Length: 118
Ligand SMILES: [Zn+2]
Image 1 (cartoon, protein in one colour):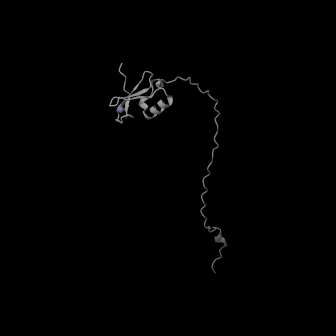
Image 2: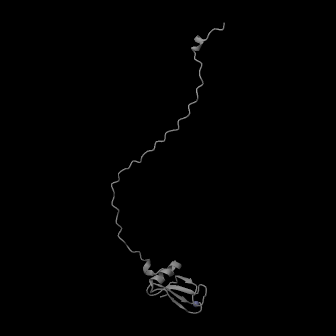
Image 3: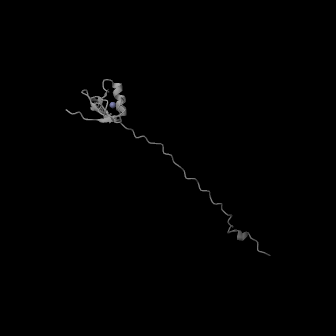
């Protein structure tokens, strides 16, 4: 059974760029093998911290067993009796317009007060 090559990384041994092919080992953990020259083997699995660091750098190399979503029973939130809360309404009073200054209007009755020019 040919293992699916997940991706390639630089070889830490012979420093060949993309020399290491990364597959899943029999435990479903990332495993590297330099098929470019030095045949160095890079065992990532077996240490959760090491796997985590490796996957952090190469997300495509996530271990198989981590891909399974764990079904967690989701508890439905209980419907709460929602009391409508009236937000305090802020009444913005329109700025009172400055009243136009009234010009003193000539009293129409002044005519009676006016003395006839002599
Ligand atoms: Zn190498």
